[in-house]
Image (cartoon, rainbow, N blue to C red; front, side, top):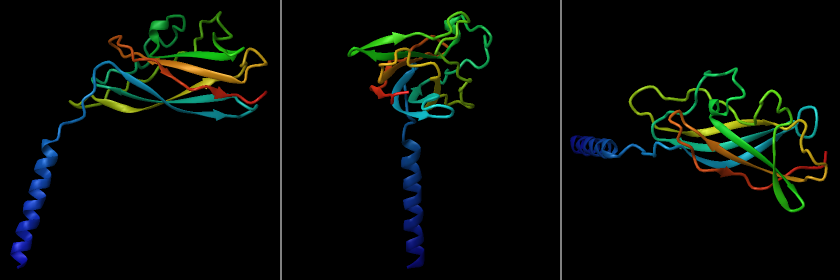
Length: 173
């Protein structure tokens, strides 16, 4: 009886590992995919000092992030990986707002570290937490709702679709 049970257990394990081995790895297109997940308002010195954008992403060939290339070239928009557009709701319509300091070309865009995984499987799947410095905003004191549009670009130049946030209520400052 013990030998019979051991054989059944061994066959079950072999069968399980065989099925597991036959399963295909996840496959994603080489163009990044980006989705809005959530946000977090971070107060430090005021009601809102920072808004952290939470975005999920996938990429089939793992070429996300440019590392430290062109780190001091803030005027070259092609040196960024995550493109962030910021909007304020004024009179029922969303209007795009540009950075306060345009003289030094400081965009809302961000650079990501090189996220390419080691090994043969280059598939990437995860979350990006992008801090948006909110000091100096909103630009209009009557604004109580904002939103973001974000695009992820890989090193090949492939761009994701636009990930849009819902309207985000901003308490009066």
